[in-house]
Image 1 (cartoon, one colour):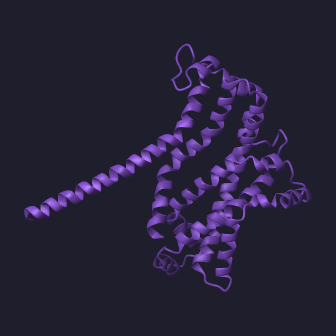
Image 2 (cartoon, rainbow, N blue to C red; image 1 turned 60 degrees about the vertical axis):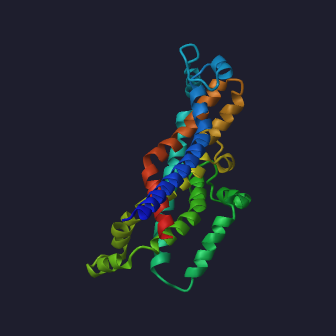
Image 3 (cartoon, helix red, strand yellow; image 1 turned 90 degrees about the horizontal axis):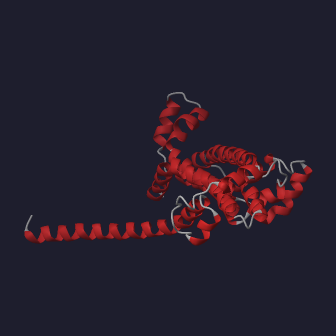
Length: 289
């Protein structure tokens, strides 16, 4: 390789390094901007009132550190019950979304029939039209079924809300899977159910994690349907409980910030657990799509 080629290769390598550095700088800046409010809320939840107003951006010190806000939340608010309700609703809804969504996506991607395209268009309409537009009809349906103030009503609504997106994403990904693997499984005598559970599901695990994270956040953070369908104290979710708690303790900022930190925690834990799968699923979808 002569000097000119060496110089060009070096310039090309430096250009790629510079581009990557610029992209990482932009992403890092965005990350800092995104997590800054969360960090401030969590830090100030461990301060007393004086520390919150005098040093809102500083770390808790011996003079300002306090867990009084968390004590108030745990003693005055029934947050353990609210947490349990939110966990039940979120976990069951995610299970139904992933199971039913994956099975429907497998059918749409694997089998060709006359209504295949029509069902795809129907799912896209389900994504475009917000489910909240049908709040009155949903409430009337739940009243007729005697499901008001039950967790079942929330589970049904959230499952219906998450299925269109889940089916759409999973269908597009499953269409990129090799048919040879499934045909080999059929030759070996596996039934269609075993092919789905033992062959297809392991291959789409990263995408399932991506769908789970994207579906979990709106379910956990939703305030609209818990307020309308399950507002009794026995069925309140943590988001509704935090909202009402803030209304009662607007002057107790330690308690308000502590309640917000408690509500934020599950989303952060979920992302920490599934971050690798989430990134893998997004990357796979970008490459295969």
